[in-house]
Image 1 (cartoon, rainbow, N blue to C red):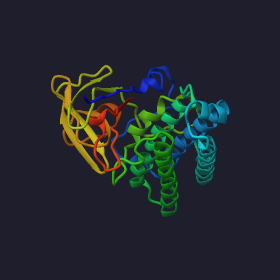
Image 2 (spheres, rainbow, N blue to C red):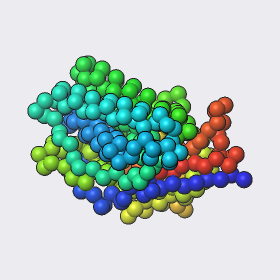
Image 3 (tube, rainbow, N blue to C red):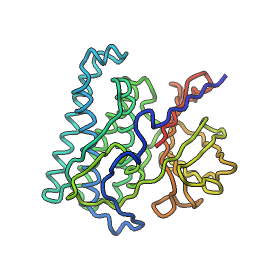
Image 4 (cartoon, one colour):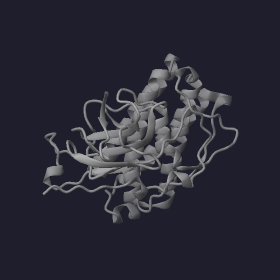
Length: 307
């Protein structure tokens, strides 16, 4: 009998409304996004990741990691990742100079090394998708190279955390999934409690929460959104370089056959951007075996991360 476990994002974080998020402005035009905006967007994410790893390593020693069932060598590797994130901060800050945004204050709700590792897996995956999605806006070739080498390092982090540490899929398929600026901002902003008032605003917006219940590949799932009617709208499922639109009928949608999906609610059946997205993003991750087949039919659980 198939077993499906739904893990909501509130397992990891409080509701977004509990936080004071950085100033944001709406945009539907890429004309407001230049290299400085993209670098500050990336720097905002790197500050968050750096604070995430530094805080956890200050809270948990090696015995805490091993007593919680993580490998003995895990903490040492996380120390290296923390150093990488700090190096990313320094590089981006140096490139921006006086235009650089400053670090914010953060709240990460991990309570143990294992919950920290679970959240690390989510953040690293989102980081990869953030750089992939923002690459289209970079015009300076030197900046593009900088972003590329950071992206590849983040991808190595993501695969290591998911595979050896969390014993889950180290990748989701042949292509990572590029995500738009506002989608990533929605994921990240709920960890930010406050920011310096002098920080430059970003051309982004945060969307209401989107929730899936009983989600499995190729099957019907219940879907709802905070303060938004889903009926008649569409779920845009992002997987790799593909987007699939499925209309919500009677509060339900059929989930595409994929191992990893990002999902948003949109008013359009052809477009999912700041002008059409009404809720999201939800992260749907489904386990698969070493031969590439779904393992949900063998009793393994799927994960639905609600944001």
